[in-house]
Amino acid sequence: MAFFLGFRMNSAYDRWWEARKIFGELTNNTRGFVTKIYVYFGNPENLRENAGHGHTLQAAKLIDMAVLYIRQLKNEMHHNFKSVFSAESKQILDELKVDTGNKISNEILVALAVSIEAGFSEKANVEKGDLMQHINRFYKIQGKAERIRNTPFLMIYSAFTRIIVSFYVVLIPVFIGDIDLGGENSGFELLAIPIMVIISSAFLTINKLANLFGEPFSENKTSVTINEICQTIEQNCNEIRNKIKP
Image 1 (spheres, rainbow, N blue to C red):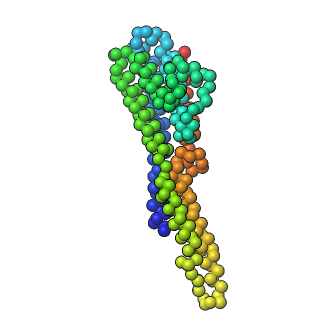
Image 2: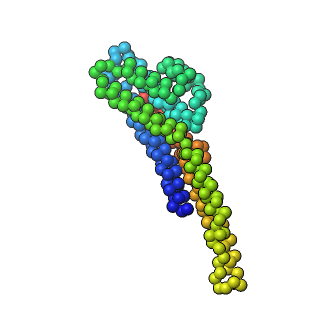
Image 3: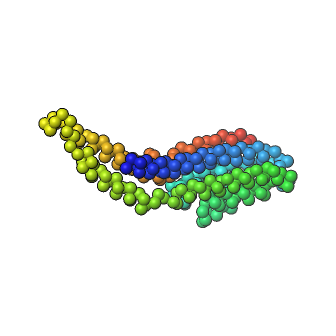
């Protein structure tokens, strides 16, 4: 039973750790993306001639869109697909022609890709290609996260584990038997009670933790702290955005 629960716990933790690595990858990719937006758009030679002095404003909008993407992805991981945007966010979405009737996270990435394609000149293909690679990584990260969210632990496996553990706990008194140290009148047989409680509690707790770790995007104390991670990403993005001079 210990080996059985150990395998169950390891499988659940691997699932939790994969989810944590996905959002760590999201953090690194977003930081690199907004930094390159700031650097590449800061050089007018990379942009088309009709960009004029609006290149800094365009860079700020793209960073704001990246922040909106992070918020939307977080909401979708919590099964909130239709977020409520502020008036300022709605204005940015309308300017970049984001169709909120479709899946918003995908539409934001499409709008980012279109803006990058339209903003850079033919001489800046390297810079444009670099930013497009970050867009592709966003798609890959989102796909990995959605795979975990949309593929729950097998219900039959969880039910089978719960039945086996419960059956084992019920039979623990039979397994332990009568502790007969020091003779029949020694009273040591009462030790069977705390031993049964400890073993039962340990096995039931491990099984419960395995069920919790198996759902890394659920909003409980053992889930991946994506709210805090996304807040850190937003803070990093805003720090870069504040460097942009109007």
